[in-house]
Length: 240
Image (cartoon, rainbow, N blue to C red; front, side, top):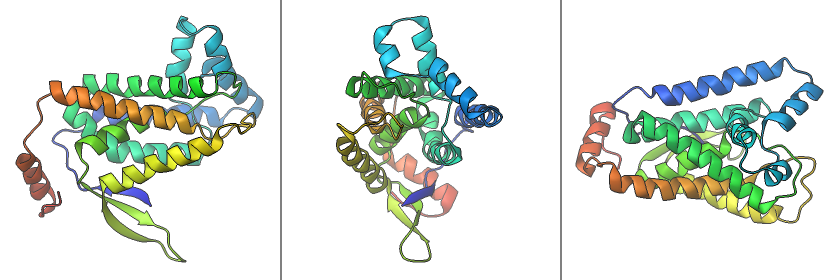
């Protein structure tokens, strides 16, 4: 199931989420004009390479590599899937946390994701690129804060896809289980040719849930009935 929308209105325009999407797209467009050799050199020199991070973990360059790697992507499919997830789930997390906290949360999850993958494969020479780890943190936050919200997705079954509305806990829970399954299958597999950094997804997701649990204790949460009223005012029906 690939999510395409959720039944979860926001009270404010999610400028930060839109800004993150815009920067990711602009960076990718810039990448598109480079040759494969030029792109590989940029990935090596300006993104996370685990074996290099282990050698110099606390330098300014390593810090910048972590940040830059969150805006590089390996292809159109990689970019589009990440941006769709961010657009659907990020606006509500931004709305609930506020813009400043949301920015800090997003990058903290990205760092946690990168560190997790490095701990799993510290000798890897494959550059780690993509916003997936940070976005995984957003998904973890959404699962904890809005488990019953309906998510509409495309279901590919047989010849023709169809749409279905499923609670977020099933959509995001299944996503996380899939990452765990694929992550453990990838242990011990030669990744020199690249691949998906499943443990970055896992690390980002867990960090997102942990940070959200702490933030929910600090940031006042609107009553459930108020949230239900927002949904009713926007969509004309209660859905969670």
